[in-house]
Image (cartoon, rainbow over all chains, first blue to last red; front, top):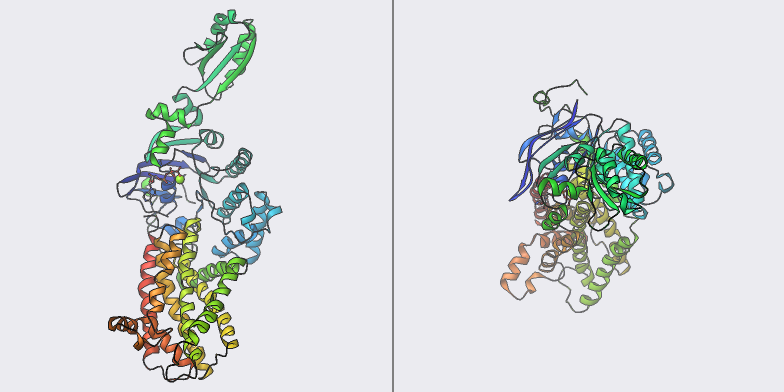
Length: 320
Length: 280
Ligand SMILES: Nc1ncnc2c1ncn2[C@@H]1O[C@H](COP(=O)(O)OP(=O)(O)OP(=O)(O)O)[C@@H](O)[C@H]1O
Ligand SMILES: [Mg+2]
């Protein structure tokens, strides 16, 4: 069954077309990534789908219910973690969680046990009885997500859950989100990082100017823009031709010599498919000594450059 | 969760009753109490705010009573100037207290908490009701502090205790009406800083061009006298002052109740409408 459906969704703010006909379909139980640069319309899409903003045109259907026709029923099925952590600073982590349970009219015993359960799940037990304003950014974000899960929503919306987190907290957060997906919660996640969508989401939609410009699995997207790039440096420059011939069978395009180094070759390869070990073996079989192999994965910037002809970064700035 | 359906069949008919979560009056009351509870719970934890919120009324009472005390003639019908002045200070402080509503709402908006609440299946009106109710409680606490200081300075209830209670209730009710004006302001401004000035600035003309500190007939311009006499804040001050001093308040009680009710009805409507359109 379709958990989230958007059809021709538009949201205009005066002249600004934050959403301009967005189509999305998220199957139940999947993690779906909505990828786009600053100002692409990610937050607006989330707001419309979570009943916070009404669409200018088109429709959004959550778990079978139209958001404009029965917003309250939609709210019983969703959890929302907005772009900025919305916790009550002066309440403790536990109190914040119990508070949400109270909004759902849970019984006292139920809201207490659910709070404890979530504190365990999000590794917040030690800080459970400290006010949230003493939490680190990562802890606060975890509490924020835990608060969205109190009533066990069928569908969770996460708006840029890792933006602003340090690399370690980001990795930790990925684990929590992946686990939610494993447990069968449908997750719609927005992000500016292709890598994040790649790690977490089964399917990704790239949006720009409120429109979907590409869709598919992370590997499909990367292939669409030329896949990963491998960069091989060999020990002896005189072996460069032999090395080239060894790499050709694994490349999806031309194998080029690096203009700045007589020992280095670059080649596009299929994303995420264990090609690199094969290349190393091939070089070994050809009797070429390898100094270094480096794989460069495309980023949102690369996707953008290919799909729109301009960098995501520039666009972001132009929006500011 | 039902079986797979084609997109066109997905729409449920709009059944207002087919809703889990809060519905009806009970829902509004329960959710409003939860919201109020959230605000009241953090009052004792915000020590800085608590200190300032206590100092302010104490300072007002001391300042006005010492500065104006000797310099102004006691109007007829009052045993001394403090008996005349204190109700004015009470009224002003309580009315100033309504500004907490706009600041609190702006804070909740800026930290995304309002969005969180709006995504929950609660009675949506409870967000504003809960906020305004908790601000009345906060105001009542301020009032008690102020009253204690006033008593230390020699202020007394000259009328009946019932009259004094009525006067207090009237002041708090009037301020509750203003809280709804402040709710609209809090929802309309884009930052906490803006709420801080937009919530306070109009309090000054309202409370000073009034009978809070002086007899309006002493004002130097006729038009200013007219404004002051028509000012609803003058009405509520006069009513409270008469009741605390055991005088006859005349129409002032009714007039101020009507003003408060009018403000509640009009601004609850406007603020609720604004609340429902936050992201539009
Ligand atoms: N309330 C609003 N009023 C006017 N314009 C708005 C409003 N909300 C969003 N916009 C505009 O709509 C566009 C999309 O904004 P949105 O916040 O959805 O982008 P985003 O993809 O979430 O960006 P970010 O990565 O910066 O969070 C932007 O140009 C933004 O300025
Ligand atoms: Mg955003």
